[in-house]
Amino acid sequence: MNWQEQYQHLRQALTAVHAASEAEAMAAMVVEFVGKKKIQQLKQEIVDDEATTQINGILRQLLTHRPLQYVLNEAWFYGLKFEVNESVLIPRPETEELVDWIVKEIESGKWKVENKATQPHHSPPDSYRVTILDIGTGSGCIPIALKKNLPSANVSAIDVCSEALHVAITNAVNNETEINFQLLDFLNESNWDQLGKYDIIISNPPYIKATEASTMSEHVLEYEPHKALFVPDEDALLFYRKIADFALQHLNSNGAVYLEINQQLGKETVDLFQQKGFEVELRNDMSGNERMIKAIVMSE
Image 1 (cartoon, rainbow, N blue to C red):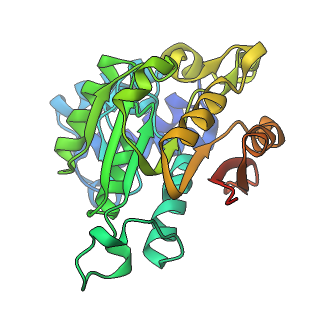
Image 2: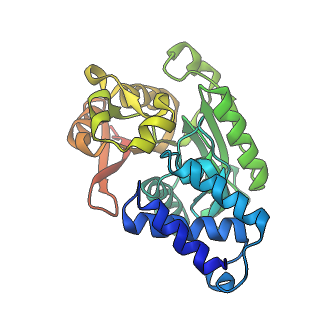
Image 3: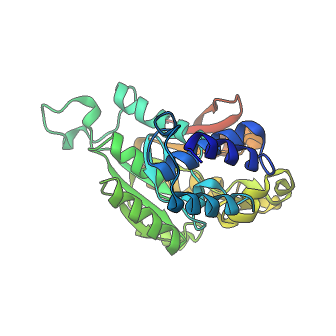
């Protein structure tokens, strides 16, 4: 069997548990992962026994709804490769948009911080040593992508899960980035004094209501960490309330909070921050959903 035939076999088998377009994309990714080349370069080459065994093992896992990223132990985010396993969420394209918002605002010079005095006299505006904190870092995809694109930034990240932090540290090493990681339960406010002050606070916190679980796909519910996904129905904005309170104490003058949000709770999230004294910008994602906010403390 050549690689083109193997691809067709995979694609057909995966339609048993995935839509045709998704099965097609997954089959191509498996072929390129095992074949270590682009599918166009592999087509007529013969698949050896070792590769066939590996592909069959991957297919068996995929047919149980295990996400492809966990099966391959890798995911791509903002052009970078990350190790992922069941202790961390699989990075989403929507979160790339949140990172891109920050990168573009800093690079354009639109977003300024109050630490100019610490800058060398001849440094360009986009090289301000911005301090960034990522809350609930998971795989580390957010802080690593920011550090890679804003190399002069001082980036820190926290998570309550030691297994997740292990993955994040591995990813930082693999992507040659220096991040200040810390194991910390953010919801426990007594821990906040262990953290400093920041120009940017960013987070993609748990925001899915428990009652929304019935609308979610099987591969998410069965394999991704629920602690990183769900919040109680009676307190769906738990993390946003805590982040707002933390930001009032730990945000530098002219700093900003950037957050991914539940698309069903855009108005409620904006209201929460406005009531605590923030000016809020709400943005839609590529699919038109209310997906992210930027909040700054209103000047007196």
